[in-house]
Length: 410
Ligand SMILES: *[C@@H]1O[C@H](CO)[C@@H](O)[C@H](O)[C@H]1NC(C)=O
Ligand SMILES: *[C@@H]1O[C@H](CO)[C@@H](O)[C@H](O)[C@H]1NC(C)=O
Ligand SMILES: *[C@@H]1O[C@H](CO)[C@@H](O)[C@H](O)[C@H]1NC(C)=O
Ligand SMILES: *[C@@H]1O[C@H](CO)[C@@H](O)[C@H](O)[C@H]1NC(C)=O
Ligand SMILES: *[C@@H]1O[C@H](CO)[C@@H](O)[C@H](O)[C@H]1NC(C)=O
Picture (tube, rainbow, N blue to C red):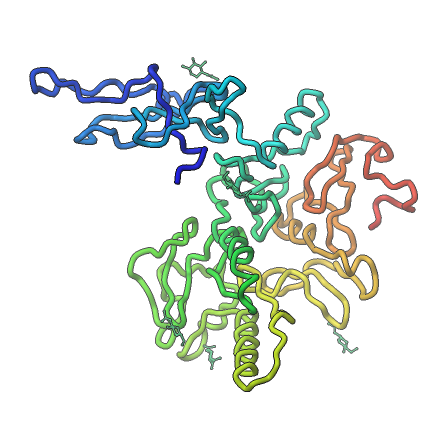
């Protein structure tokens, strides 16, 4: 049951902390491995309850670095002393000696490619090195420096959830747990179920909405883990959601549901619409109609909204989570801009508020491929991330199209 990443290491360098016993008297603990206290690039570890009878010694399980000896034996094979550090796995080399090697993965490949270009001096100034987790998967979010950060799947695909790029503040507040929950749910159960399944409600940054409801009962959860907190709950048949301790006016997209008289609600137009469609579908099946299940009822975004693109009189426009139009962005039917419209740039602009360094968007709200900042231009991908090096001469950029009348227009 133990994967190759959790193997246990036997080494003579570090002794497990044992209670030294002399004539039956406890005289103290062996000093723990220093790694947990140092915690730098080459020396780190994990503090654990000590494997002594009383669990009373300070214990540090060291993480071993790249190339260091490790054992493929599972727990119970000898003394548990340490294991390969994050991103490493215990692998046999040509001579069948086990040592810690970097896990082969798409994220590590992306890092290696970045590092190679970094050495060659061809990394763009606004390019971020992709972050991987301890298993070599992509970490929970990716950022465009000076703009925004957005949630990503373990595969590195952008998913729901975006917030302002604010360095340490982002790292502290952006966890994307709710967003990833939806992504996994869609991947794992969608193929077997003919209609959208409602997951936990998320906030626009990809965290769990602190207010979650089951039928008519609402309660509070931790925005990072989604785990229910306290025993505080309310019944919407009696009280509005505003009376719940974790209710936050800022994140309530439809506050009018708490006005007027009971019964109150805490739902969204999209969730209600989907619920009604599912009921209709089930009724049709019960009535013996031959319903094409897979003609698909479209689900809502993880925050319960319809989406960030609306169609009005046949024209697509960009909207925010409250269904307010963003800027003048639009695309007419039967145009290529209509088909490719994603409003990602419009969303980023909206998230950045009135910052002066907002990206420039195409007329349909997508990122313009060429972005300029302080006289230097760069090419960006559809998520606004810089690709290749910047240049003060626009015509030298790889994404510059000489056949286009004006590179500023799109
Ligand atoms: C980490 O700390 C140890 C012990 O203080 C030191 O020997 C080692 O060089 C340090 N490594 C780095 C990368 O700073
Ligand atoms: C994440 O890492 C684990 C362990 O290496 C692997 O089994 C899993 O498939 C990875 N997930 C993705 C999406 O690659
Ligand atoms: C929610 O309502 C449905 C149908 O009314 C019922 O089957 C289900 O048991 C309820 N769930 C809870 C947790 O009360
Ligand atoms: C809650 O929803 C019900 C059913 O749609 C409706 O009758 C009621 O007026 C709503 N309550 C409020 C306060 O909007
Ligand atoms: C949609 O078209 C109708 C009829 O042409 C017009 O009255 C209405 O104002 C249009 N709506 C918008 C949002 O443009």
